[in-house]
Image (cartoon, rainbow, N blue to C red):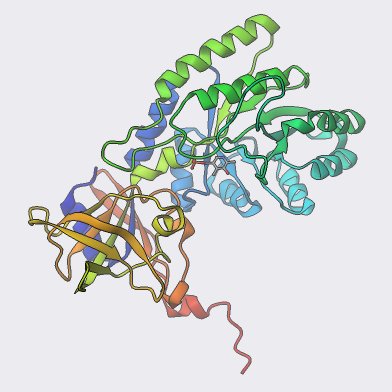
Length: 401
Ligand SMILES: *Cc1c(COP(=O)(O)O)cnc(C)c1O
C-alpha cells in the first residue's frame, strides 16, 4: 500500500479528484497468477477495458502478459504499447464485420461470438486465418451444469445449444478453429465455476481437431470489503492442472489454457482521491459532499459496489457516521451511513480498489471534466494523464451559431 503521506503529497501536487496507480501492485498480482498456474501451460491476457492508460499497457507488456481487447481501438492501443499481434486477443461483441476484418489485417487472435459473423468470416477467408469461438455454456445438455452468468438471455457468446449449427458452418466454410472461449462473468469466488467451464470446453474441444487454446475468460475476484477474500487461484491452479493432465493423457493432445484477468491485475493498484467540499447536516443524515461524483467513479451507483473509504487527512479522528455524496445534480451516493474518522471540510478521502473500471468509465457529465491519473512506483510519482479542462469540453464541438 502507498503511505498516507504519499497520497496526500500527490493530491496536493496534482489536485483532486485524482486517480493513482501503484505499479508494483500490478506486478505482484501478475506474479500471484503466474505462480498459481506455473504447473500448467497457461497464459494471461490483461483485459484492458478495466484500465487502458498506455503506461499501464506498457507495464503489462513488460511483465510478459498478453492483452485482451474488446474494440479495434483497444487493439491499436495495445500495438502502440508494444504488444505483438499474436499477444493480442480481440473479443468483440455485436461489432460490424468490417471491424473484425480490420482486426484480421492487424494480425491479432479473433474471438467470434455470433454465428452470422462466423459464416461471413468463413465464406470470405475459409481456413486462411485461424479464429476462436466464444461460447455461452448455459446448462449443458445431459448434464446439470449451470454457470452463473451464462443466462439464456445473455447477448454474449454463441449458445452451446447451437453447437450443431457451429459445426455446420465450420465444416462448410472450412474454418480453422484454433481456440474456444468462455467468459463466465465477474467476481466469481467459487472456483468450481471455472472448472465446470473447463469440463464443458474439454468436451467440445475434441470436435475441433485444430484446437490449441482453451480460454476461460476471467471473473477472478479481489477483496473490496475488509473481510472478503480473493478467488483462490492457487487451488484453481492445482485442480486445473489435474484436469488438463487427465485430458492430455486420454487424448494425447496438448492444450494451452488462457485467462483474461482485468480486475484481478489492476483493481487494488488504484486509489481515487477526492476532497471534501462541504459537510451538510440534514434532519436525518450527515452528508460529506465531495468534489467528484459518478461521472468519475460510477461503480457504486451503477453496480452497487462497495469501496472502502479512508479519511487520509484525519486518520486518528473520532469515528462518526457519514453518507458520502458527490457534487452532481443527480442522485450521486458513494455510500450510506459509513463509519469514517471525523470528516471536516477540506479533508481528503481516499477510495480503495479504484484501479479497475474507475477512470475507464469516467465521463464529463455536468461538464465536469475527467480527473488526472498518476503512476506511483518505488516512492516516486509521475503524471500519466493531464486533468481535462474547458478546452477539452469544447474540442470537438462545432460552433455553428
Ligand atoms: C471484462 C472482460 C474480462 C475481464 O473481467 P474482470 O472481471 O475485470 O477480470 C475478461 N474477458 C472478457 C471477454 C471481458 O469482457
